[in-house]
Length: 178
Image (cartoon, rainbow, N blue to C red; front, side, top):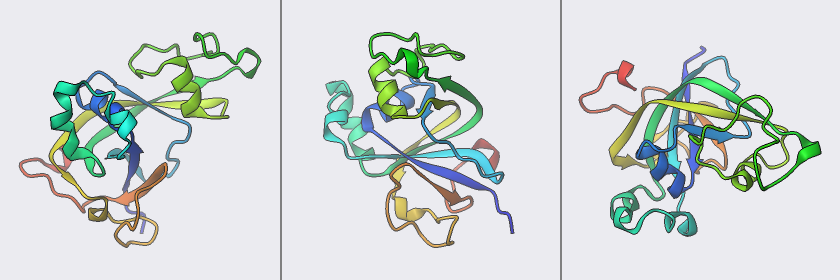
């Protein structure tokens, strides 16, 4: 059976904050889901990275602390941008290496952060965030079912993992909302 599946990504607290506040509208990744059964849904698991958390404005940390180590949001990705790095012009100082999708600033990454995100890849992907739903009460990663073995997740993904739909019900929302 080819059941539709979403993706669970790990994300640092500062970038989660930027997404939840609507400042960051493009999530850049070096790898993206390739399954034909991917429903374009993405869940965000917030890491416990203290250094990243301290980048959140102090007056907002009290609110975002509850998301550390938990799944805090879901969004749909209906558009994927391509970032191409030119290895002949590898620089940390500006954006001349972006060939086809100039940064709009909506990815909220400095050139050095973009290069670090993509690592040694020449191509990266910008997942355009739409239909963002930030959870009032964050979920545990164990609340999700691994699409590979139909069992609850045993660990947080380093990058991403496919998860089955239907394991989480939103109070007052329909499947179309999510």
